Length: 307
Image (cartoon, rainbow, N blue to C red; front, side, top):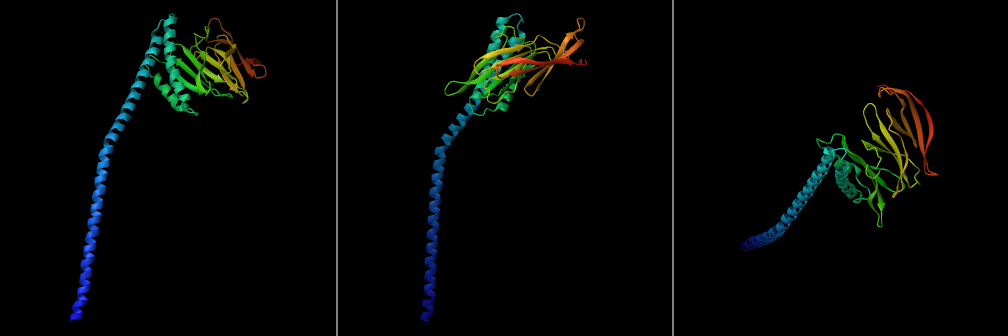
């Protein structure tokens, strides 16, 4: 009987010991968890002000950037409106307004060109397009193009709208360390005889080893008469040189065939009716790398346009 009791007592004591051990582990785990929860709460409370400050700084920065963008857009719109509303003979007021608008454009372009070795022209041009949403700005257009060459050169084409001037700005790398800066200007105030109605630009392809940039500016009307002036330029990164210029020609179209610039226009317009052309001509031009000259290489009759 005693053996039986002993046999029962031993398992019972083991059970109690196991139970006490399990309870002790439970209390320990619970206590540790409470400590970690307390630490997490304290750390969270300490981090909360920093997070709030960080969020506030981010919000303030974002609001400041938006305010700056709004102010820039307002200043630009004001300058363009001043050009549109100025007396065409008031060169002083137009020049002042155009310089203000161009300075704003220069700032936007150069901040992008100098921000990265591979500037995002798509985002830049989207930003520039947003500047053109003005009631007075019919025909407004602003865009940046890479002009190529051995050294990176970019061009801004700025058309301030119907009845207002247009301009081209050239940006090239300068200084050490190299950074982009304004290096060339084409507008009515730097080239006194420039015809700057709705200007555009066309780059002439040159061999990769050539460091110069050669391009043609196209300025004039875009209606059915297509009357314009064509000018060829060479830019070496510092100096801008005019190579060739046409008269004001009507019924004009142009194209690029390889490295040849082809211009078709009315060679003999009718005196009584500007819509009538008595004879058309097609001329081909090319740039000679060897001597830096712009040359006409051929001319031939062309068919009259259908109006």
